[in-house]
Image (cartoon, rainbow, N blue to C red; front, side):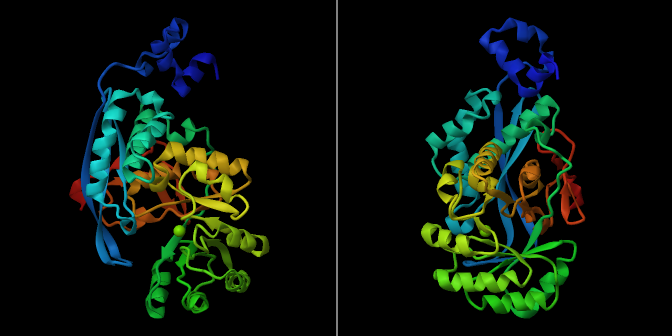
Length: 381
Ligand code: MG
């Protein structure tokens, strides 16, 4: 790559205009200069209808309300999405309030400050916020489109590396779970939620109808380490691939005890949100589950991948119930992962976007610029 191309790809050509380095500016392609045109940011709620009822502790949902963010500048629109953990008190109205707090920051800074913007956003609004994720994804989609590059290329990643994704099956009656396994025929790996109540029976039920690899997610449900290791040793003989968040996030010592003895990898989910959480988990977990809605978008997720890799930890990329906008964004990072759990868009009947193709149990990333999402024709629904 010559210097001109390097500057174009990294976005440094545009920045150099502002820093007055005229030699770089004169080499830059006109279309890649950082223009002074204003940034416009809009958002809308979209009701996503689910193929099946989604049961959570508070009841059953038939739809989800996600918030879509549109970052516009220079005639280019980047799309982002916020999905919500209702159990954590998140919803579309709260996200809209948070967007209103953050939008002035994103409007007043240059788009190529994309690496710095999440840090500034954290000062305005600390902690987990799907609004931060939606803004970051929309901006990164814009950056990719501006440079004519899919984001996996922008991050320098290999599109040939594909990872099979799991499909989640919730806790239900034995007959209903068997039915769900039958419906999950296109997926090569299953993820089963356990609750510390009849765990072995659940595995036996699933195993009676399929020999596919199974990942189990305990959601912090095991409280006794001796009982936990006994279950893990039994599961190792049942074709279980990994154990996600077996014990409460604050039981790090007990989880480290478990990891030392476990024949299966132990993965953190509830225990990890941001890159700064990872170092203290290195002794207790073999890997981490990264979700864009928790991290606050792609930039922090990419940082998390770098930190985990440096600490010798493996990476799972997971999701919420998200349309193909946010799922396409996560798929851009798939070659950094060992395990994928990206099935949220497959649960939605009226997905407003398309992009990556799901085939042979894995995602084939779109070659379109940015996150690679394409708006579907609304008349199709
Ligand atoms: Mg989990």
